[in-house]
Figure 1: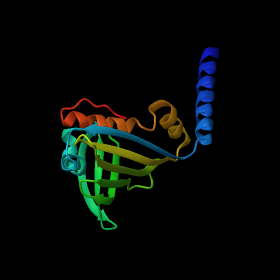
Figure 2: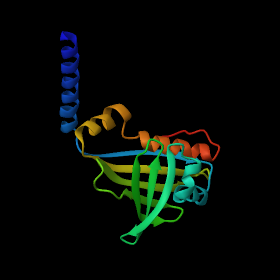
Figure 3: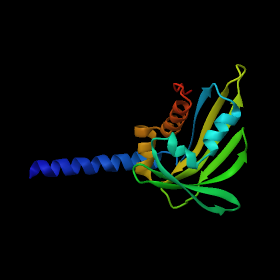
Length: 173
C-alpha cells in the first residue's frame, strides 16, 4: 500500500510540474516549415486547395466534409484517424500563390491560423512554406506541444505527405 501511495503521489507531482511549466509558457507561438518540390505553382495549389481530395494523400486524415460558409468563406471539417474533428475556414485565397486557413472553433483547447505560400525557385521548382500562428490555451497541452510533439510536428507531417503524393522524398527545411 505504501508503494502505491508513493507512485500516486509521484504521478500527481509530475502532473503538477507539467502544468506549472505549461502555465509559464506563452499561449501563442509561431512555427514554420518549407519544402521545395519539382512542381509548378498550379500543381501544388491543386493539391493544397482540394480539401476533399486530401484524404487520398494524408494518412492522418480520415474524412473531410464541406460545411456551410462562415463570414462568406468556405469551411471544411477535417476528421482525423484518431477521431479529432477540426473545422477550418479559408480566410484568404490567392490561387497558385497563397492560402490562409484558420481553425473555426474557438471552443477547442488550441487554435490559430495556417498560411501556405507558394514561391517559384530559380531552378523552375516551387517552395511551399507553411507558417502556423497558433495558440494553446490548456497549460498541459501547451507543455506537450512545446516539449513532446514540437510546434512543427503537424507542419512536417503535412509537408512530408504532400511530397510523397508527388512521388518525392520529403526534404523539409
